[in-house]
Length: 169
Image (cartoon, rainbow, N blue to C red; front, side, top):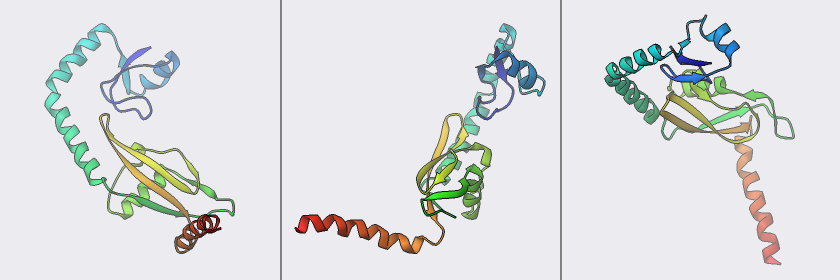
């Protein structure tokens, strides 16, 4: 079923996109909720005319999204979480956690536009913030064990010493 989206739908598309969805999803959810209309030939013509008239507004929205993305450029997050002995997290780090950490830094970002798989282990990850369909920002996220920031430096030096030992022999 071909539909024209009337608003942004997370995981499907952005406003004024023409998308193909399963019939039940379109008939039972998108159309009754007012999120989409059937993409008939006349509806497509109306959409094309509206996009022509709104081209300058869309350019302004994209420029605003680029400013927001530039504000997040160079931001890196370090999230401390409770961890088991095997490096497994108790719970997970989600897009909501990333949004809260950004808020602490003074960067207000809606958690719904942050794309991140649930993180369940200690390590380095990348969160993508999608401000616009053509503008996104990548934020490096480092997940560490609580209280391990002080322990991280000796642990990082220990493998270097082990690596030098076989060379000395």
